[in-house]
Picture 1: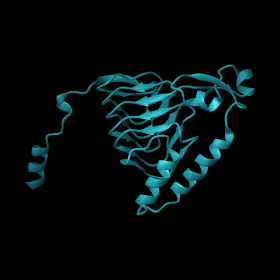
Picture 2: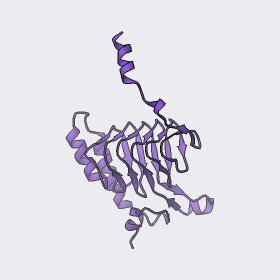
Picture 3: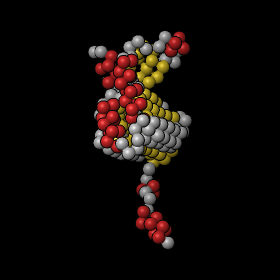
Picture 4: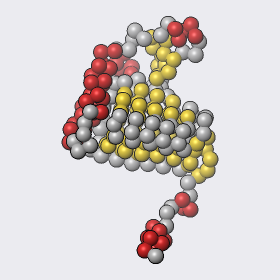
Length: 201
């Protein structure tokens, strides 16, 4: 199995800097640059670039520039995906983004890591683990999601959080490191009828 196939597997791995197919980053960098130069009105052009960049890209994937990633082929969107300004995805492993995902500005999804041992780190030893966002996940502004993390369906991550461990479904979580604060309940639903009554008053 070549290293490209290892990168595409949904498993953690260890690598040396010489293992990484640097030439593949060139394509991603060019496409990201091109995407980030588009006008807001060039919706069709943006969609075409994302289809070429991502491994799987739903027709409902919307990204506000600037956006950057390492490879692109390891990013997969499955439905409505709204990614706000200045997002970075270090996709040395697969990043799976479920339907109805909202990703706030300044967020970083980082599969890639480095050796903790300083000698190994200096020798270019790195690590990588996949990231999974289940359906209906919302990441607030300036979140960092580390490699190996799965965020459960419907959960909300508070702005500025650093997510180092899995988050279960249906919760609000926040902090550094990110921890579960509470479950999401019916009380979180906005009463739209009441809201509009107030607006009309």
